[in-house]
View 1 (spheres, rainbow, N blue to C red):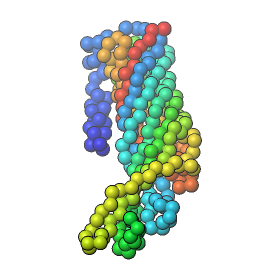
View 2: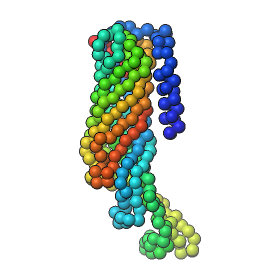
View 3: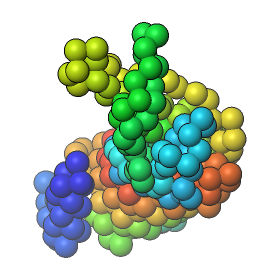
View 4: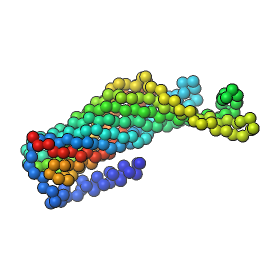
Length: 265
């Protein structure tokens, strides 16, 4: 998935350095006033930054996790409001309502231990090995408000641009997903791996509000006089913490695309 993001970023750079006027040789946007609206979505390359903390409350020093990364989806609806001269649109206010997933896997510092006494099916084994894994299901309903500047003027959004603004998210869900796998020696003296056991628990200490700063590079492409596609690559920088107790922050390198329709005013 990292390779996919790099390929997308490379394609974005190629678009940015190309002559934006070449696309307008085919489609010449008409001068029009109003605003644009449409769906937007993409993927997050999520990164967790945390202190060390215990995976299992019953073993506070044996199984530890810290930091982590994974891929998660985001999407919603986007509004874009042009400002200034309708013949030379370069300044825009962008508003978005998004479902944003920051779900990820934590990295294990010592995810397994040997010679652990375990009791399964009424039999105690003194030489079991125990392996743990921890991930988080984390999602927000977000409202983004951003300023967007296009480097190329035109009667419709066109060419490369930059976009930056704050993000306010309301927590929709926050759970830990803990998986424990036990390998023991059975009565016949052979190794036996038991099916993994996964349990989900709510993160009671997770903050209900998330505030972040979202910055992105954009490129507007006209498919018609009314439809504009906008690939986006950016970074979501957290200001607040997911869980202050573990010094847990969730950030993301993101990529996506918006398809907006020009509603004439």
